[in-house]
Length: 542
Image 1 (cartoon, one colour):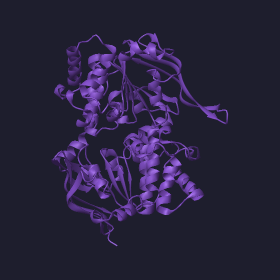
Image 2 (tube, helix red, strand yellow):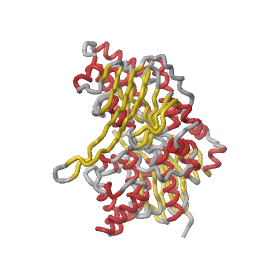
Image 3 (cartoon, rainbow, N blue to C red):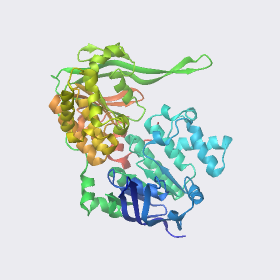
Image 4 (cartoon, rainbow, N blue to C red):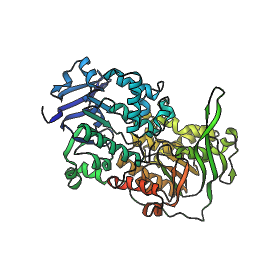
């Protein structure tokens, strides 16, 4: 048996559309040894995922083709394998974890059924044995009280919990090679640390190899034995991880290593007017049981939180998935009901109806995590950005509205002449700029930023952080910045709230919390974000 498990040689991938052919992957080669972790690193569009999907022939054929190359797994060329042979390899010998679990999980099937289906197909394990194995897998990936999650559907889980389920499915058959395509991008830092620790443990126990695809170089440093750096379809540098980080040779590699959000937010000014204030805020979701569906308990998503946000200030809200961060933001913007007092620019809006809130909506805006999901694929960018103006400023003429749209796009660093294009014609970073322009065109006073950089490349993250800082300084915007990426929070937030299970664990100036955290949970977050090797947090689970 050779030491090399997978050998990719001179692989090229081309896409054919409208009579045109474009090369996405151009003559790349790399090997993965048994028990080795190889990281494929690069920004969006570099060809990482296309290369990984080629291994299992998951590309959209015949629109995609392979002008050349071979992919040898365990001595067999998968490029020449039959459909039956590939079906045996997929999910059995080679498994894959995808970046976005919500689109990978079946919304109509329970978690138990989706994991058990893999066991039945590949191992003929059913019934009680399958349920036992499913519970074991959910425990392994850190799902809290897995017995209560078996009947849950994907939409009932947080983003981090859904990704954990995807990892459980991928590990169900103890594969020889695990392809992990940005598996921790949507996860908070403590969960990232746990998942990476879990993957390393499984690799050591079972001799499993991994192809780890990511744009986060911090993760690469912790998990990979070797690194292949990709850009524009080519591998421009490869070598041992320590060597690549210590002495990068290629210009692009040095660019990636230097791409991290930098700078510090301005100091909070207590003399500025209060824009948003919450007092003893609570959002409790009832748990019903029995034939009469009586309320037997509550999920306390937000439980007695106070906050004050002034003009020109950014309040960072951090915590694990399911801690209540987004629920808090939705309650402040009155998109879900809550208890307690909420004051927005002097108006007590806690009891406002949808109709009463409508005149205030232009002054409070939201930028969501996934720009592709939040932008309508059927609308041109000009219509997307102008939609709010049509609702809140109907007296504007077509020319005035178009001028406002063009100005908003230019303000976020986009060419106004591109406003007739559609979202799919833009990169991820450009789409997020469009989402920011859609919010800014209404000249808001308060903006809720819900993980606006988590789906972006490192260099694009830094650009978006700079953009948000510039817009805040120019318009004295108040930001509620929800994120699990503490490096981004540190670059943008003046003050900070650390949340866990609906409650505030620690609150205060962000620099004080970053340099001298008081609570054990906050210390665990900081250690996981800035030095993953220094912390193990098995008690912090989903």
